Structures are given as structure tokens and as C-alpha cells.
Length: 254
Ligand code: PTJ
Image (cartoon, rainbow, N blue to C red; front, side, top):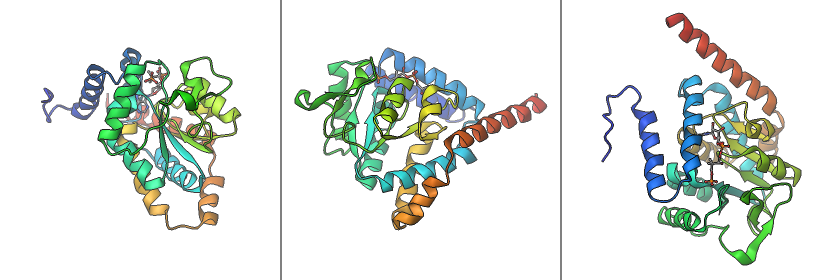
């Protein structure tokens, strides 16, 4: 049972933290994942802990891009498995995407725990665990280089929530379109992805699924136009302005 009173002004943020700590205790999250959460929380504070205009636009474009994909894959790490396993499976089912476990801090036990929680939440198949299908994605030194031959290796569009910059770049070099969730608009991941959703993944993952559902009856031409009209760099710059305006508003109150 949660020890956080619902009336606490920072209840939502503290509950997300609790989820991650519970995920750590269940063997899903790396120790470093707790630090990554802290980094995210700081940026979430700066964006006002809400899904801003730029994030909403990126979500719509990401949805169009996933619907246009021939072979979309959602990459899952420890933090994502702890924070939103049910929502990941829902997105995968809505879009026909494959799910692949891919870890920065490789650990077989943790991988098994992640697969288990995804399956408990309805995933029929989780890639990234069969050693005979393991291939190397060049340009990465971390364990993230090991990918599934039928998953990320083959994918044209890869959703990589909470990522590290090296792999984003390697995926781009391998010709893949990369969609990421990252609360830090200045991170290498945010800056090198094709579509960056600067928002807390726990707030926006369902919005992405809803947008996929809403756009699923649109024709290819309409979806392509949504993607082609989008400029990630410009959107990130708008996002930074949203943070600036938020801080200016707060400095007036203080
Ligand atoms: O489970 P593993 O072994 O694959 O490890 C996963 C972590 C997250 C530990 C690993 O990928 C890592 O070290 O990530 P970084 O380099 O710390 O980057 C994490 C990024 O995610 C940072 O830019 C954070 O601001 C951002 N972030 C943290 N929590 C959230 C988030 N973005 C969106 N939603 C969040 N809840």
C-alpha cells in the first residue's frame, strides 16, 4: 500500500517514484535507473509536470510515423518495464508493433523479470531473449548493441523510451527512424531522434496510443504529410521556450 497521501501536493510525482522503487525491488530496474528517474523528475518540474503543446504535436507525429511503419518495434528497458508495462503492451497491440527488451546494463535475470512482467500484462511475444537470434548493431559499445534479428535489427521505426544517446545515433546510422520519450530536451537522445516527445513517459504513453487509434483511419498520404511537416529541431526549440516561459511565470510568483 502507498504511504503517500493523495492530498500531498507532489503526490503524482512521488507515486511514479514509488513505482520505480517497487520495480527496483522486483529486479526490473537497474540501480542507475533510479538516478535516471531523478534526472527526469528535475526536468519534469521545469516543464510544469504537464504535457505541453510541443509534446502533443510530437505525439501526433509519432503516431502517424508508427502507422506508416512496415515493421515497428518498441524497445523496453528496466525503467519502462517498471513504469508502464500495461501501456506498452496496449500501444504494441494497437499498432501491431513488436516488443523487444534491450538493456544498457545487461543482466540476464533482469531481462527475464522484464519479459515476465510484459507477458503478465498481455504481451504475446517479447523479443531480445533468444541468443540464436542475437545480432550486433554496429556503432555501440554498450550491451545495447545486441539486438534481435527479427526485431530492432529488421525494424524501420523504433520507439526507444528513456534512451542513451549512443544507441539513438547508431539506430539513425542504421537507417531507422527513431521515436523517443525524453524529459530532457537537451539530451543527445532528444537531439538526435527523428521525433522526440519531451514529456514524462507515464503521462504520454497512453496519449500516443490514443493518437494511433484516432489516426488509424487516415490514408497514407495524410499520415505522410503529418510526418513531413514536422521539424524535430524546431519543436525542441519550442519546447525549450515552453520551459523558459514556465520559469518566467514562476519567477513572477516567487
Ligand atoms: O534498464 P537499462 O539497463 O537499459 O538502463 C536504463 C537507464 C535509464 C538506466 C539508462 O538508459 C540510462 O542510464 O539512461 P540515462 O542516460 O540516464 O537517460 C535517461 C533519460 O531519460 C534522461 O534524459 C532523463 O531525463 C529521461 N527520463 C527519466 N525518467 C523519465 C525520462 N524521460 C521520460 N519519462 C520519464 N519518466
